[in-house]
Amino acid sequence: MAGRGGVEKTPKGELVWDGKVPSECQSDPSILRFNPERQWEIAHEPLHLGIDVGKTKTPGIGPGIPFAHQLKEKAGQKAGIVGLVPCARGGTLIEQWIKNPSNPSATFYQNFIERIKTSEKEGGVVRALFWYQGESDAAMNDTAQRYKDNLKKFITDIRNDIKPRFLPVIIVKIALYDFFMKHDTHNLPAVRAAEDAVQKELPDIITIDSWELPMNLTTFEGFSWDHGHFNTATEIALGKWLADTYLAHYGHLL
Figure 1 (spheres, rainbow, N blue to C red):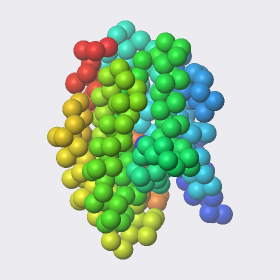
Figure 2: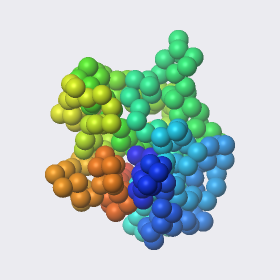
Figure 3: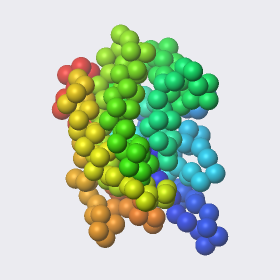
Figure 4: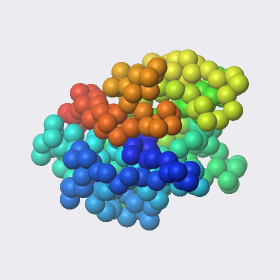
């Protein structure tokens, strides 16, 4: 979700973004980003720069800005100014995002809620959550088996904490398990099944399947050099699909 499109490995083993920005990802004065300092600015790639941080994390092209461009193209003036609130952190388990007041180190959830609430103080209205996570959970059978209950709790807690805001959620079903992690007992089917189950058990949840994106799990066409992250073209396709999905189900609310 944070995006690794255009991220390459140098001969020295360093991960760097190539800096190439396709037309679908160009900055636009009517597409804003809620930055790490919790201020609005004109969105630019990489959208998750300063958000998805860590020694092994190098943000590149993701689906966010292509989503916004597609939304504005299809919805026209109804789209208004599109604000993106990036929150993704690559390589995390869903249990790291679960609300847990008794654990002061469980900061991901609190930061997430604070970013939502703060983004609305200057007139913004959060219209939807896009959730594309679970590869790390799928790398281990025990976390994969707990995924459905954890995802239900995560979404339910968010909706309770931002009431009365109506919050539809669009879930992207994962394509792979995280083979960069220890994965002796990986269980991709369990996480994919959990994502479908949550759609059925909670209201206003839509799922789209990343297996239907323009990529190939055998040849790894559509993936970056590491075969574990989407390349720029696939990220752009995902962003456009998210926009089309939102408009098909909730465009009347704009």
